[in-house]
Structures are given as C-alpha cells and as structure tokens.
Length: 262
Ligand SMILES: [Zn+2]
Image (cartoon, rainbow, N blue to C red; front, side, top):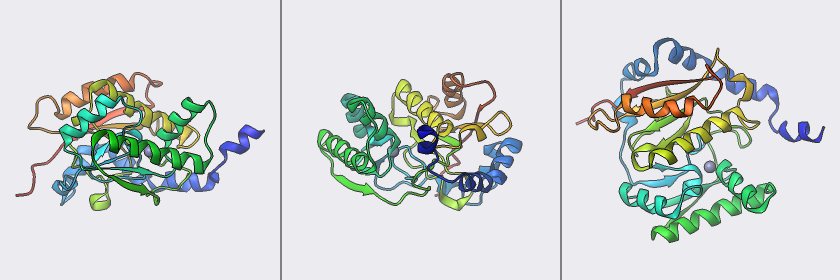
C-alpha cells in the first residue's frame, strides 16, 4: 500500500487533463508527421534562435535554446562535459528543482532516494561542480518549471543538431525533452534520449497512457547542411533507442531545420 500511496503524487484527473491537452497536436503529428507541422508554422525558422549558450537539463520543464544535458551534465564524464562545453562555447551552467537526473545520481550515490530539499541542494552542488570544472559561471537554480512539479508531461524527445532550438517558439510543438546531439558523443546522446523515454514511461510520467495507439515520439531535428547531423542520419541513430522499448510504443519522426531567416 505504501508504494501505491507514494506514486500517487499527482491526482490522476490532472494527469488525464495534461494528457488530453496534447491530444490534438499528437493526433496531427501521428497523421501528418512533424515535418508537415513545422512547415505549416509561419515562423518555423524562429525555432532556431541563437543566443548565449547556457547549459540546461534535458527536462521539458526547462525548455529553450542552450546546451541540454541530463542534470546539466551530471551523468556524463568530466572529459565529455568539458569537451561539450568547449565545442558549444557554453557560457554558464544552470540547475533546476525536481531534477530526475539528480534524483537518479543521488539514489545511486547514497543508496536511498533524496527528500525534495536534499534533491535540489544536490542538483545545485553538482551543477556548481561542473561550472568549476569548466571554468564558467553557475547561473542559478531554475525554480519555476514549465510543467507541474511532480509530473513529466513530455511525450517526445527532440534529438537536436543544434544548440539554438527552442520548441516553445510559436507555441505549436508539444513539450519535450531536448538532447543536444550536436555536441554530445553518440553513446551519451542515446543514453540521455533513453532516459527521457524511461521518465515518460515511469511513475512521474504518463506511464501506461503511452501505448502503440499513442506512442512516444523520438524526433530527429536535423541540420540539412551537415551530412553527419541531417535528419536521415539522426533517425538512423535513434533506432538504437527505439529498439530498447516494446514494439510500437516508441516511434521515430523528424524534420530538417528550415533555412535561417536572413
Ligand atoms: Zn533535470
């Protein structure tokens, strides 16, 4: 019984409501493909805006452009993080409250789950360590998420060839995890993508609502000017994640970034 009580952190009616809210856009994505959705957006090019590159979590609660790594990089090796920061020219590191990646690492480290206070302190401590490692500033803990604090509402991972992608622009594309494939090694990027799917399938996500009838989407966001990071290449890479889950429950979709606005 205790277990059941523990996982009922969000009333099921709220979960259902958050799910239903996304049904129209997902119905369209399943029917037409996400490329058609993006092509119909008048300001699609604005989905790719470059600004100061800040490190953020992959969490759908902290969307926007930037270098996205789970827990701002706390699951990656020091070498990998330094390499990514250098390539992306990142200028700061954030953390956020209620971080699933920090929860994972805390539990692995201490053998028990953290309290909410311990979790947020841990996420900050680890992000500060990454800032120190890379010689860039820690720019603070994001305390207000664009999702309910106890619920992951993502049904999609954006697997992105750029650090400029912001799926919230135009308010058309659904909320999703963002994995910055351009700067991340293949194995790490696939690992972070699978983490997003596992969160969505778990007790803090939509869980069993995601099915072959309403599958999770792995979305390749390609760079058509780079043969290594085009949509087709990224789709091929994502197959390794799709295969980890029951058939039909995860699909691959994608689009190439439109030409930049001149
Ligand atoms: Zn996080």
